[in-house]
Image 1: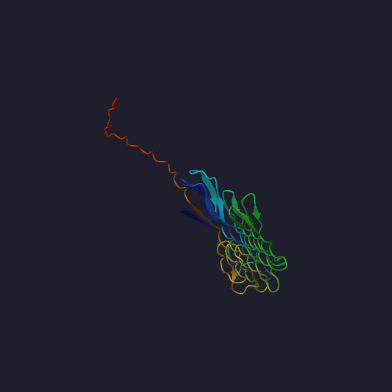
Image 2: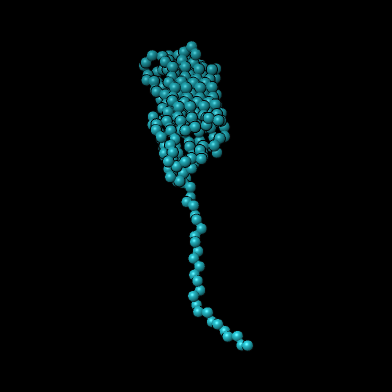
Length: 255
């Protein structure tokens, strides 16, 4: 079995190996970050996820373009009030795992939307960012022998803070005072007011009324490929039949 990993920020073309006619893909986009302000803030959305999707009918020697998304940038403590930062999309041929979007701050502290996941035909929608409570859960759609998962939406920056939505990872990031939690992706979202960087596409929680934290970076995107070469054809062997060279014995027929 062959395999290949691509990390955030990488792009190029994967060359289909000799004897390979299908490839199985797991991938996710970059997560969004929550907002930062001395007020209410929303959490960032989680990225879309595609798990164990098999692309068939490949021709060895051809190439498939890919690009791996980054997570949204972190926001340091002590700066001006700002919205969060969206991640960027991850693509592999027909497949796209969309990024999680940024959380908002102050007068409209909504969570960021979760990213969609699509193969160009079927789409799992990301959860909506919370506008008065928890972020929405992403959809799950069966496709390509695997599943498409929408990212979880970021939580709303309510008084108590709201949780991020679910995705492939069904965990929910906790909110905190006036700060929404990050939406889940391949990994669970990051809780509000922790300044913890996300992993594997996760959105990060916001930091409202900050004391000494800030907002961690959204989880990076990733692509994982596995493939199995086709077994070689087995042709029937030619069987050589030896000729019997023993002398013939003739018998004389009596008349």
